[in-house]
Length: 188
Image (cartoon, rainbow, N blue to C red):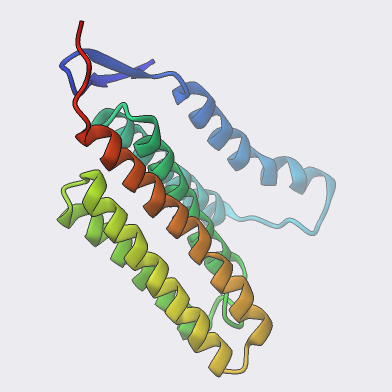
């Protein structure tokens, strides 16, 4: 079990650690299994390396978050943000969100991730600042949806716009974490 020091100095563990890393390993193994049964899945070594790095970054990021705070809302907010970022990168690498994966407009989504990451670092990963960072990432995502709409990609604009929702959910969960952490604790 992964452990860290809690807000009150107690050792804190992540009981989901094995499930998270095991799920990532299973997800990475799925294409290898699928390739044995169908020719429609055709991954090369570079695909497995890329996905392995993405999964390691996502799982490692969540492990770090569990050490930063034992607050359930904070951890849920981080999980939502990480999954949203992961799916954004995965879709863009696989097929692209705007046009195909080679469309330079897809680089805009890297900007959304940069906004979220830079905002998190500037907030020193504190929940109140993280809420602002995730709301700003939602705004950036929404701006790309509007761009896609005016660029003639109406159906894609709706799909891209749906990614605003998890960024906003993450922001709201960080707000909840900030409120709960700012309330005085009852000590016996």
